[in-house]
Image 1 (cartoon, rainbow, N blue to C red):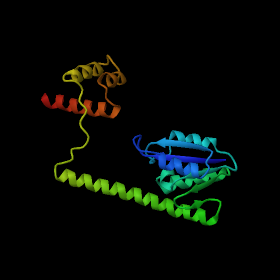
Image 2 (tube, rainbow, N blue to C red):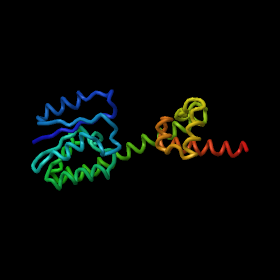
Image 3 (spheres, rainbow, N blue to C red):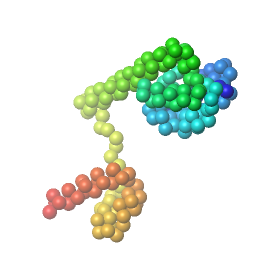
Length: 192
C-alpha cells in the first residue's frame, strides 16, 4: 500500500496542495499533522510509523515536510527500512529503493538541516538588532492579580499548601512560579 504523510507548520496553513499531490500519486491513506516539524513526536507521524508494514511505501511532498534535520530524517528512514518499507520524496525525486535515492536522501537531509539553521540564525540576528533599537522586549511578563501572589506565597512558605497547589492558584508554570518566589524572597530580604 501507498501511504502519504502531509505536514504544515500551523493549523492556519492549507494542506490542499499536498493532498492533491497524494491523490495524483494514487496514495491509499493519508496522515496529516498541522504542527512544527522540529520534533518527530507528531501524532499522525507516529500513527503512520505504527501502521506501515513490509512492502508498503511512504510518500511525502518534500523532505522538509517529514523531518527538519539529518539525524531525524535518517533515523526515520532507517526505521522504515528495517520494516522493509520504502520512502519516496516527490520534490527531491528520492526513492530509497535505489542506491542513488539513498545517497540523495542523505544530501537533501543535510541541506534541509542547513536551511533550518540559517532560519534560526537570521531570527536571532533580527532579535538582537530589535533589542538594540529598543523594539524587542521579549515575552510579556506573567503577573498574578495584585496582592494575590503575596498571599499564596505566604501559604506556600508556611507549608499550608504545596508548590503545585500554589502554582495552580496563581496559574503559573513551574519555572515561572519558582522564578517569582526567588525574586519575591530577595525583595523581602532586601527590605529588611
